Length: 208
Image (cartoon, rainbow, N blue to C red; front, top):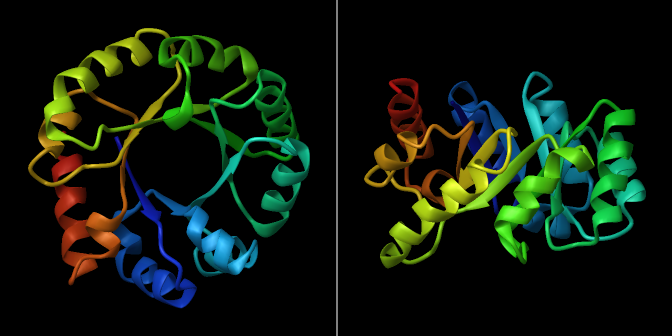
């Protein structure tokens, strides 16, 4: 199980400083959409230059212009790109083909999927390499999330990354589901001591 850290920040230098401090505990660095909107593809390039050994995921949320977006993300140094599950099937397929031609991988973000089960079922045939499944924002939705997990994981052989609304308290139950990776964002990046928080999450995950 991997620790996937998402940098949903605007300040690139701040993001890079935090990343440097927690490098030893992360398997994947996600360059968030806000960083890209604010700083352009330069944000991806800076992350790859500073962390050439690290898997860099560009959260570009492809909805159209798939080939072009994959190309410029690759040129910037990304190893992975995200594609929205709610977009057209030919866009997903095109993104996957373009990515694989350049030695990259594609993560399908289920945040806008009209049917989670159907998106999970079709993903592999499109060439998708992994799925991103967001947690519900309300604690009362925990049962619904467990049902959603079963629906998604039961329809795909692909690795699934779980994101959102994850704390040290909720993490053990998520670890029990055995996802391929757990995505942590502001719980680490907005913490007073990001290093201590990253170490805490890493130790909990590594014990599983």
